[in-house]
Amino acid sequence: MQYDVLIIGSGLAGQSAALRLAGQCRVLMIAKRTLEESASSRAQGGIAAVLDSRDSIESHIRDTFVAGAGLNDERATRFVVENGSRAIQWLIGEGVPFTRDANGYHLTREGGHSARRIIHVADATGLYVQETLTAKVRNHPGIDILEHHTAIDLITGKRLGRATDPRCYGAYVLDDRSGAIKTIAARHTLIASGGAGKVYLYTTNPDTSTGDGIAMAWRAGCRVANMEFIQFHPTCLFHPHEKSFLISEAVRGEGGLLKLPDGSRFMPQHDERAELAPRDIVARAIDFEMKKRGLDCVYLDIAWKGEAFVKNHFPNIYARCKELGIDITQEPIPVVPAAHYTCGGIVVDTRSRADIPGLYAVGEASCTGLHGANRLASNSLLECLVYSEAAVADILAQPERKLPDLPQWDESRVTDADEEVVIAHNWDELRRFMWDYVGIVRTTKRLKRAQHRIRLLMREIEEFYANFRVSHDLIELRNLVTTADLIVRCALKRKESRGLHYSRDYPETLPQARPTVLKPRPKQI
Image 1 (cartoon, rainbow, N blue to C red):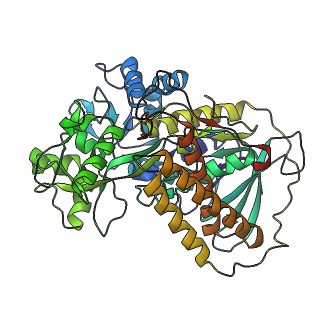
Image 2 (cartoon, helix red, strand yellow):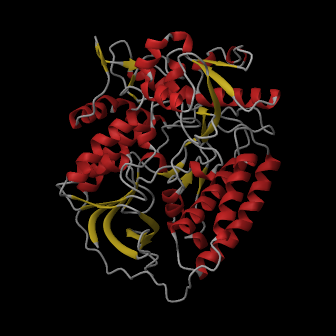
Image 3 (cartoon, rainbow, N blue to C red):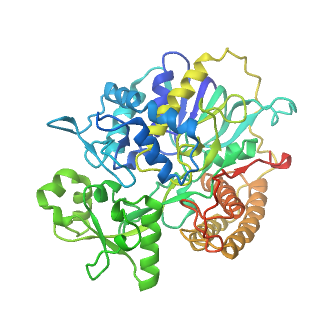
């Protein structure tokens, strides 16, 4: 199977790139489940961009730097913000039905923003954007699609035995339904596989968010950076029958108040911005109050705004909570923090190029420098759009290259797994100790305990991987433990507290903000 561009992932970053490329080159998109299932489709709040004359580029940049605790890359941040309006216009041109009011498109405000600049579709922006683009992707003759396929590893020149050729030539991919492994050759490979929220026990992410792209790029020889900065969304619905339903940042942006069980507010005691403080501050405040008081959850109250307001602004959140027996027009919403967004990832430049020629990364799998130590609300979908456009421009500017003959996947020395329970047990152990030891508040002792367990798991998983046929679950587990290792290694290197990384051993913030960059050793490639 030969293509001009292989896209690994089917969220906004991947689909927007595919639509821009289609018609100009042969494109293959692979999705672990269906095209509709991605983290992008779960984004509720909206997309941040300067669309109001009372707002400004400099204000958006400043808010991004404040939220990112000064670690943001200035060039990348300006690049994204300055291209924000054009990215939104592209989505409008594609048919995304953004919410309007009497003055035009309605803009809401979220925590960390100094102005109303969040364009949205009610409280289900990602879903509507995804549905709009997916329909176009499915019907475009220039885009081939493989659903229920999982990428195993990238194919590079070094993997082919060419010691001086680091270029990426495609990937080995598992057909999850048949068990067959396909060799896909591509002149350019675009990783758009999302983040790694499933490395934690509690997450708002879909089950597909297992750090696949980050782990594959690391094994292939790419640098990764800032993996210690895992954003915990402050308000995930706390309910026994709903494991990962997000209560949008926009609820607080529109007046939602965080309360203790007795009805008293607590955010004003933690930050002068109260409920509108950036996510890391709000998440730590909730974590502090829950641990201090032995609470299972806290409460988010938007009922005081009135029934009509709530139903009009948050119809989907209202409907889902109502199904679960919670009337948010009459009572507060029980919420807890949950792992939400991976701010670090594969190091890329402003053309989305990774360290290996022919390899690009966009969206949550990448580290552009935009988010710094904490992502500003609703900047993620914007980054997907701007950087996917940049990747497309660079891909189309490249001269056509002849692809080498790629070897088929070799299964001659492996057998079927004898005990699948090993995978399930290791998966559960990993997610539990990552939640306990590498969560919202960290200590060096906890991090080293996690690192010790990760190394034991890595040896066991690699032995399993070497001797048995690969499966969907084994691939994900292998990628998760690699990603967990990267998170802990970055966290141990940072001797300060900054943004999303809070260490009791290093509570102060150092005067100079520096990224944490990891480079693979030759034996890891």
